[in-house]
Image: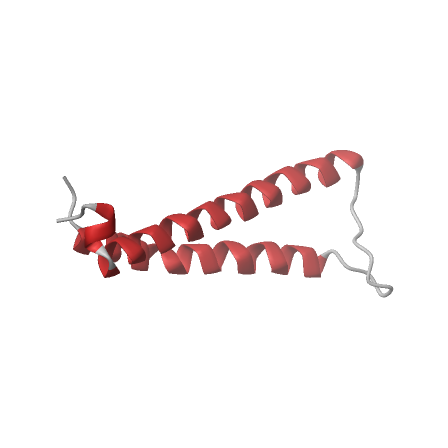
Length: 84
């Protein structure tokens, strides 16, 4: 059984991962913009692959945020979560 301190440490260690994923996706989208502000792709395959990879990165970072909040709440309120 893991302790609430361990959950807190793992949660705090994952915060830079979440920030890194969000910054990576934002920079990729910014580099694809042209003068009018629209995104440009080389081909349909590049469009689909980019959408899949960036979508997976955003969804995984949001899931990590939920998990991080759970670890922090487990540390702050151990009686609610039956943590030791």
